[in-house]
Length: 276
Image: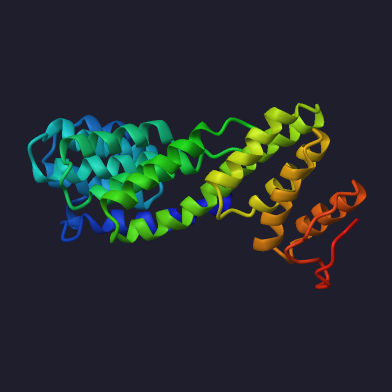
């Protein structure tokens, strides 16, 4: 999901800002990959890691930030390095390590002012692993939980604003998964199993684009099971809330073909008459 990586630029700007005031001139420009294991003072090592990050050598930068904490665990640089290590792993698409590093930062510094950013890294690390609706959605659920936690704990954070936008997309993704499963059951004429999925979309994902089709599918399923009264109820909800939807037109036509007499809340085309 390439569009998802738009959050990376924002994350990078904020992450680099954590090191404001660093003495960058002290960085050792020509360091090799194994230079992380050479003892040096915390500020020099941190600055080297930061410069490496700027060069987009994310894995190397992560190792250098980890080394800051290993060599100087009680310094102010160690706390910064923990969070920067999480970001570096995220930028390297090593999402498992990014999540672990961010969670460790939160466990050690739960009240730190950068805690919202750590939550954001966790959420984004799951978010970028979201797969097509035909595949497992465990990463989607984890992203939802992480972003909800961020919004709950830090509602005024700038990261919370982006999290809310992503939560809308996540809801649509999860609703899409339920619809895919429901359609599969419907194709097998397993109507009860199908209806459970469609009802879940209507009840739990009311703000998504999937609701209109879910209501139509409930009309379809109830008619197939010989329960026209419930089919009419679903069609009425669809017509009341989405009168201009093509899914309502299809539901209206389907009831007409089944010769179901009902008082439509609104008729596609605006006549308001009853089919049948």
